[in-house]
Length: 394
Image 1: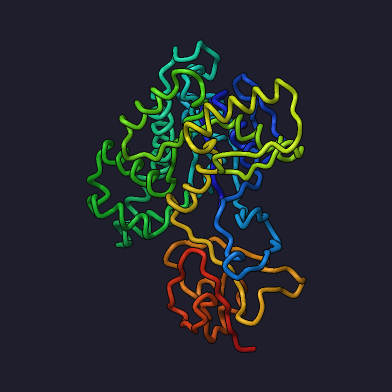
Image 2: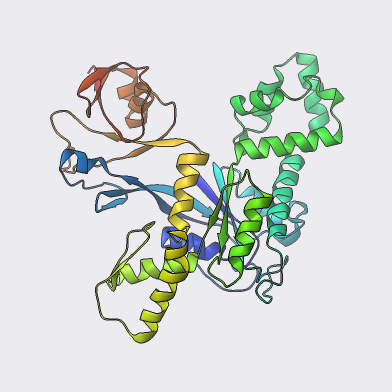
């Protein structure tokens, strides 16, 4: 799974990325600090099933704190996009192409309005951040449109001459954008099957629908702690009621994680509080009090972990499933509940078997729901936080 982090320059996009992954990336308040895309691992947070079995897990990947399991996902941070990016402005075409394989997008905006349309610093609240949502969605739609229109006339003729299933042809043509047959089929219901009749307006609408389905996106309203920014959050929610909008302070999350790493405090990402465990300097106390009062007390979280979890479990509709056994939860390397896998909602026991290993899928005999201690068949639908044992013939 790959999640793209997008936005215009200097809105705190790289700060969000670093706070999510703790990867060392350059952070500066000027346009195009990021040129080449950064890729790193972040984590989604789930309740670990180890507590239900009164054991302590030892993950192979990710980590577990106080029975909160952090499961790895990959993030990509591309350079800031500016108006006209789809036409190549600010190397926009290159940066958009970096997003081809992303399953979903996180759009980071400066909700305090302290960065103008070109990514330049201005007085807080002097720029309307709502323009950024419209601008980025338009850039993404035009990017899709440009790809669709490449060889469109030839594509249309081929579909007609060879009498191809339109949705299959479209998904094949746009497979690089993760447009599946199911997505194409769903969207094509609202369009004429005769592609030769499509107008420019219909092509644009088609591009928009494809982008919305194949690259679901949430909005991170960064710098929500700046005085006056909360009003912009409410305006944003009012204008885009169908969008998921997360108030955020990426710098607060980064500060808390770094303090936890330095053992000044205990903090579990996504929590609404932290515990100071070492004497702090006055400036450190003041900074943490600011985060508590203006972020955690007001929003209940910094927004970073919340955004990752919502992308994976709400936008992409994935579930977390643990491999385990009735007899034991320890693998051959001595790790307890070593793995936790993310699968699309609707996955079956057989899908999970193939996820573990091709041999398990091909030689599937049955699965066992370890929590209920009952056998289930290959078509059994899995639920979030299931523990499943796979039985296969040798």
